[in-house]
Image (cartoon, rainbow over all chains, first blue to last red; front, side):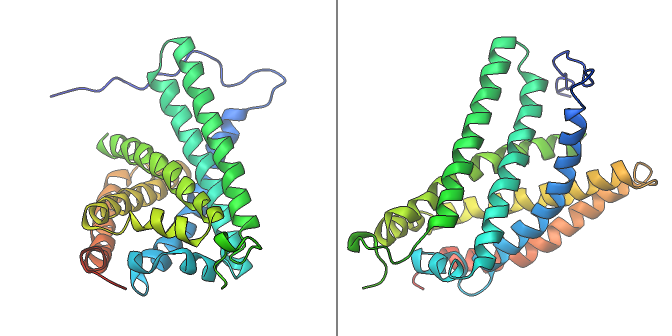
Length: 143
Length: 112
């Protein structure tokens, strides 16, 4: 039977004097955000893929209709932040387990951090500033 | 061990989809024509099957994540971890049996 490498963590003590225990907070974050994400994402999937005509109904007008209410903007904004940080921290765990060379390990974690940070900025801008009827007529949904 | 392997594989797959999915949502800033063109690429049978696989991965990762929390925090969690794995499999099958007919019907039929 094929075997898989045992998980390995780059040797660095989780507990460092005077710096708090970040790994413990990461562990707690994964569980708290995980529970919230189950609720948020199951709700998102039900409303966007199951209710009504499902994927066929999703377009600019569909999103504009949802984001007319602050409820769905907060819902989607929470999903954005919680899921990106949850996923980024999960990817960091995998990099620590499988990327043994220090330079590769650091480069991959920087790539994950940048991807998460850039998408949080772009996504937060979109979910807060979105306007279906901007003054530029070529971008406007309201004729 | 397979639940652990599957949790990692589904996690990575969901993460990469998340990156793409946020980028496609950012196109909302470029107006209705641009967004409808981008989101239109999701509406065909091939991507419909991809979405079905994505939802299958998300549902497994969600249910197994709850199992991991119960193993960590419930005093009897480790004793029942194997039973909970089969509960995860059964709940996953039930939820997918509800989701797949609805979604595949939408993905394989034309028009609104």
